[in-house]
Image (cartoon, rainbow, N blue to C red; front, side):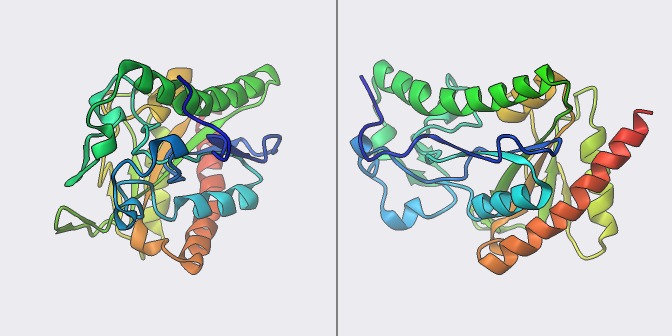
Length: 260
């Protein structure tokens, strides 16, 4: 049984596939498209514009950052309500039946063939593309630094979040140098509320992209979370992309110096 048909966009957008930068940017939740065959999943339009469907603002930040760094970027087009590309496909959270406090009627009862179609046509092409781009760099003898781009809500289940930008990593990994360098650089800015593994933390049971493509390959990696009210318009998106375009090369340089 096929999922995507005529009029449905491809599941992956790749920007600057042959870019010269060592950075490779990913945005697992950049889009909020739903395949036509699934309708609206029974979710109202105002709900589908919320964080439950996508990471608000992160697509534009990633696009601008990709240009500023001359970095390859891989962006997922479909909503995480269809399938979450930052979760193992066999996890319950991969195709949520409820997100925050919102029920997702179209996900309540799904046949095995339907789950497989979502994995095969959305999840797999996205991660295959990331893997192929990294393989190409290895074959060419080039380095790679994985930067996973995300955004988070200023209020979660009624609780306000003071953190403006979070640096996420798995503290149990052998190499957490890049996240800690980024934490130092962001704190030195002097005007930011910086989260150290806040508002989330990466664990083997919470994420997919960084554990598989970053830690799994032994690559330097970091996950960046920006609060959505700060990147909800073009001005904020440009400002945050410019800040990261300034800091990420500094972080890479410090990382390289530490390897000498």
